[in-house]
Image (cartoon, rainbow, N blue to C red; front, side, top):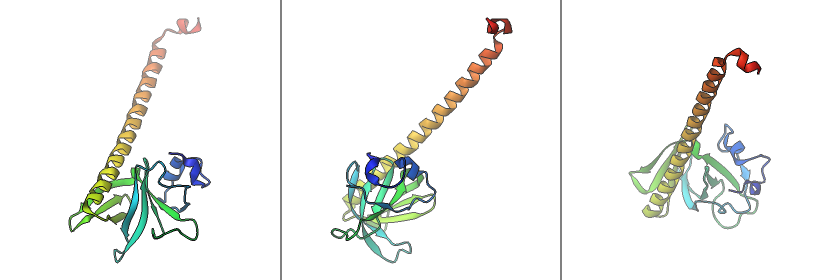
Length: 170
């Protein structure tokens, strides 16, 4: 993904994703759909679940982005986007009472979404779930690589300590 189009004063997308607040607003990229794995319009339940609001959504490799303004026509000002880092997702579920609905739950919040059809909801679930699993797998690989590197470093240091001192001086 080309992060230069985001226009925010950040060095990288990772810098944004590392922030504590996952819902910081950012100016609209030139085209949020560019590089998106999936994009479209979904309904998002309000925080108190009293209403559903149309949101433009785009799934990127590291994050699920959604517009904070209704997805109706061209906005008068640049749209503001919110981000759900996929690394913060703890579960993604179908909503049994609503065949078009699904839940994206993070460490700090639950997001209820509704698609235009059951098939579309299942496609979003599969796409988001696949990316979340890939993010978790990448994190596990990073952790494993770090542990292997640390073990190799310890082993190298132990080998150096075993070399007789007179050989070290030569």
